[in-house]
Length: 80
Image (tube, rainbow, N blue to C red; front, side, top):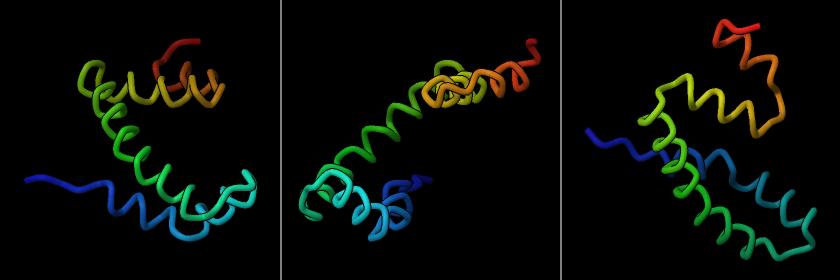
């Protein structure tokens, strides 16, 4: 069974996040919508690749690393 994750993610981002992002960037709403609609599938593929190679621990560690939160990573992996 194939699951389409792009549509639910885009529904979450529409219209509020797109509008706020456009305002913050000083760009047109349709430009930001185009950029995000192309970025979401790429990000989902990247998350999938990390999860397939290293499992859920690697995916979680990657997310924490990008957010700058390393305390959660240590707690999740059992390291101190």
